[in-house]
Length: 281
Length: 335
Image (tube, rainbow over all chains, first blue to last red; front, top):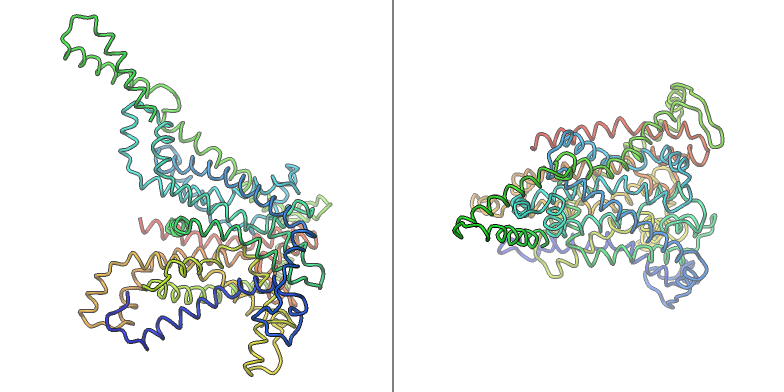
């Protein structure tokens, strides 16, 4: 919306300088993560050397991370847990979202509000009793502790996003299919779901990143090093007492972030739709 | 599409049934169509999956079961736990409101309440101001716009504990990069102990929380900005309005609906935050950065006092309920 005839000085102060400031502010920590992970220790722990550059880059921290720690194990755990909990949440969310947006039934609006409220319940409110529940089901320290509890925040989100999305699809399409003899279920599966693919993709990606990033449940419900997810493993197993292995720690942070960043970069548009769709509710 | 093929087959069958009778072709087609319509209606009425409410209950069942089992039930259990003196390895018994009384008397808890409100208040204002500014900057036309917009969202996408680890390293007592800059610019003689001083530690956790939340505000507000019709600005231009007047009288009021929703979400998430404080300070130094969630974690899991920990968590509930009620009231009013 650049006004016509805006002078360069004005644009410098109202645009270029703020843009530069925000770029540095938002992205510097990631640069720092990267550069730390390829610095040799003699540069890392030397107050005299210029911290913004690496003079003798090394891959020793990366090698250490993949060879001497359980990082790959954590990555596989996280991947498995995220995929299964996303699938469960997406299927339940599609079904519930469709019912809430398309079907009339007793208690529909109350259920809609209840799901919206659970969407706003932060995980930190319930983690202590939830640990008891997980313990009673004998699931502590197994991936299922997370696979079954992550849907508590993923289902409300998926349901909310998808019921909004289903509402934008004209009812007439479904009615036509039903006049042609399709059952309600067939109309839903063959007509509505294909049209809702962008919405389903947004919800799925969002749910996947939320499970990948989850921390407090994973911290509380898992205890053996081999069962941990990346966020918990990196924070609790790579930090030993007061001695920090900053190189390998930052390599862990970097490689734990890359999968989410990659998925995000492939589907930015869907991601933003998911985000703003969720906000508009 | 399956249903179409099936219905055509049906029709062919029906039509051939009438072929033997002595009706004119127009008549038997008409009759056939009528019969098909009736059969279809019967078919739709039969079959319990066609009954709207039964299908609906089946479709919502998985979601409802999971939410009841892992949200409603834990909530009730949490209230029960908070009324007992259960510890790890000890069943515990009913103690009434004893936990709540003890908590309200504890100095650490009062400190935590204050910390949480300061943390939530200051971080939210920072996110709002910088998020709005970033949205306004990103709303302009420039080279590599898509790339820049996409990369600005990174702090919000990357696992929070992992990016907070990078901040932990940047706040390091000896090797802090901020200290390096401040000392080399000649602003400070000696570096600051970011996480070792109560006030600076609070500043540090707030900075990291705000840094993570700014993109969320920016992208949501950017979506809001793009729905403002440009002719409003053109009309204002014709009236000779300055850029501040345009912002105050057009941009801000038009953004209000999105702004309020984003604000409420952010307040809830910040109020119940755990990760940033857990990684940076664990609530220290001397409890100056404890939030409800980190204190509850420490009491319940580090000290093993489950009943008391559950009670501390529940103290978040009244405030969250209030925010949710405001949100629901607002949605109702919008509709």
